[in-house]
Length: 280
Image 1: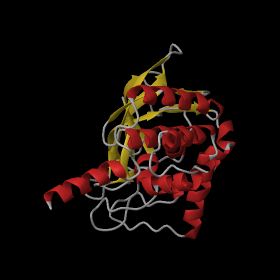
Image 2 (image 1 turned 120 degrees about the vertical axis):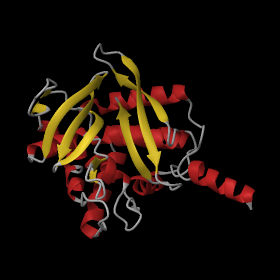
Image 3 (image 1 turned 180 degrees about the horizontal axis):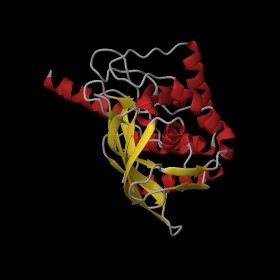
Image 4 (image 1 turned 30 degrees about the vertical axis):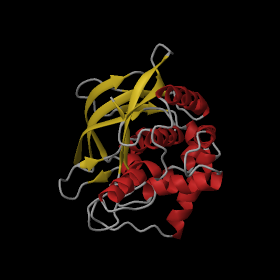
């Protein structure tokens, strides 16, 4: 019985949508470098930020022209899919499901999504044998609901990482690792910018802020990259190095690629993503 339990744990940790140890660090650095380059057409470089002490806003200007691209126009509706409070049952009706499918279709057909799929398929990763299966894998990892509060189906990887949540017990913001959501919420007047904590390489920042008056002591994200890039890199790291620090290539201010780190977490021996973010 004991050996069966050990086998089951290993299967759940490694076998469900991941193939432990099948992707080398060298391969991770190479494919993540290509993902960054593939994102160039959707990446937003025309923006200004304020990192000085006592600044009122982090973003002072963002050129929104590329928000018309499908990767953004199909991303923004997803931000409206969720209740930010944990402990409240999330409902995914037909309309919300359609938003998810549209975004996943856009992602899979994007340069970064295609790159990720082709790489994972070439490595024989379970759940990536064809595009239909790959889409189901992404949906399971990012959008299937689970019980973060241990009572109701109130959370998902996508909600936690890309939208953010407010812990109903502590009253603090949790997750929230996407710059587009931060900018959107700043524009809406829901963000109080407190402190710029650190900048790592080019455009990797960590901040302290309040969202709907709920403190987020530290949140790191890559500024300017598209949601497709974030999804691709976080998925890659969660599959290749689940629950660990993952080395990826990221461009530095001098134009050269350096090593950055992504941390992912798995939700309790399930295939679902609990969190994923750049370390800074």
